[in-house]
Image (tube, rainbow, N blue to C red; front, side):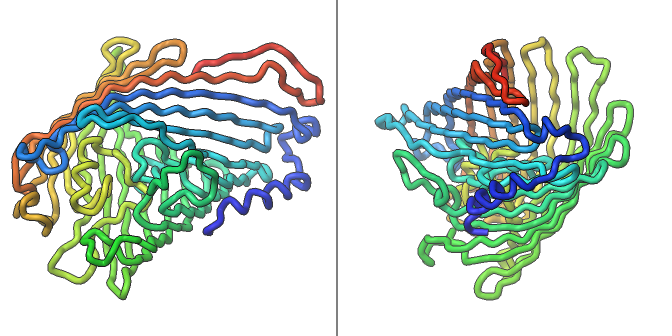
Length: 459
């Protein structure tokens, strides 16, 4: 588990002996080589205030620019082998309070080998992205580096039988990058402790208009280096996660999506863990509407830790500490368990989306946010109540020709009795992304011939 990347040479050694599938010809098994290269440049302007303490007493507003560059290549050998390499660097310039700009580190965001072993089985090993369903349990393997990356060090063995897919997934995410080189290393923490997991994820689409998913994982979180005097330090824990998800179309533009999961385990020295999380949404799509309008209403619940018991009841987001519900609120969670640590939350959500003109898509979202228990933290920040507050979000996305896209996002939260103060918090972001993909001028064909002619494609 710890050295996931050590499996890559083993998989490579197996390649010459792999049989061709029934759907392949002998030429396809020998294969040609296709190479794709890519470049992405992302620029963000972010501004926020009051979202860490909901108080006007401190001058804690932030204005910053974020610059992320990603370079990647994909090599496909026939129809059975693919190798991905992604390099990444993100630097920031904080203008309020003013700080000196520094170039940040370059990292290997992705290095993964995928092999099709036969008509039903495939394996992908190495550094790769993993997202399943709504990203409720699998989305981001390194929450402390923000949106710079979302990778996992993992092995994913996949079997397919008709409309059913079964995956066996092994994950090893240390708190710092140990497996691959880093240039201009900043010793950046990716997560507060070492995380490892193994599990099975099943996806079935046998029923028309229905996707059923089920999963079971065993996860450990160990070696938190913070001193025992730190109230946020977490002792070693091991827990099992069992859950299921359904996404079903009901007709007349209606659909329902729901997911529920249960966690059970222990935390050192012998403290039981019993937690749950889930959500349910009803969505209406106006299929004949040129603006593609949708309306959605639902509820999300993530159990909270009762300070009056020895059991740990707070939901532990397995690999899902990302801004699923809010960019603003992940910073508010710093004073509880950690950034983007979604727990002790019950909230209603109403949402509308539409596309008034072709390049533009709009989203309006309202959350009524609550907690199952008050938080027994610093009384200068936390109050005695359970109402976290009301949040409004407005987002506009544009997609333009030549690989350009971007968005504008505004979030505003009016805090409730869960907090000691009542100053409104806000978050505002403008993002622009340019992406280029292309193939080299010369690519080897199936029988070893070479063909010329550059090809360039948009995203």
